[in-house]
Amino acid sequence: MRRRAAAAQQGADVCPVPTPTPPPSATVLPLPWAVITDYTSPPLPPLSPQTRSEELRRQCPNKSAGPDRVCPRMLKACAVELGMPLQHVFNLSL
Picture 1 (cartoon, rainbow, N blue to C red):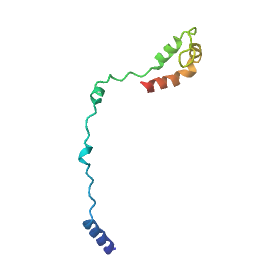
Picture 2 (picture 1 turned 90 degrees about the vertical axis):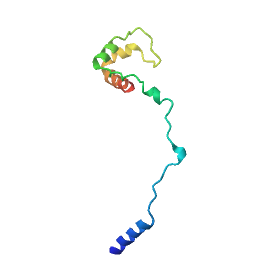
Picture 3 (picture 1 turned 30 degrees about the vertical axis):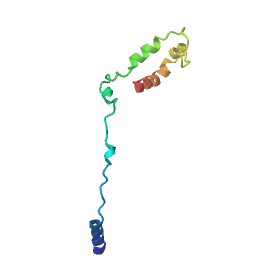
Picture 4 (picture 1 turned 180 degrees about the vertical axis):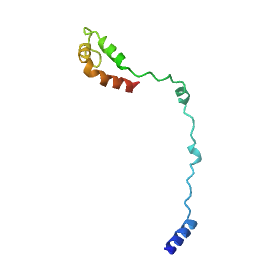
């Protein structure tokens, strides 16, 4: 047991592991758009259940479908079932 410990100690003294150093060309420069990200607007408040209900109730059923091809009549009729999933998607996209 002592021989293995001594051999391990000798091996550690003889062959140390060098610490890698980055090449001089690998310097990190500030990105040109980093300054723009400092001036972002504050985050929007999440959509509340009350706002969600009001917006789904305000849909005019006589309007045509939008680019998603979902007509407002269906949104208004399925407001109870679609309310929570839509609120979750909207809050994730904010």
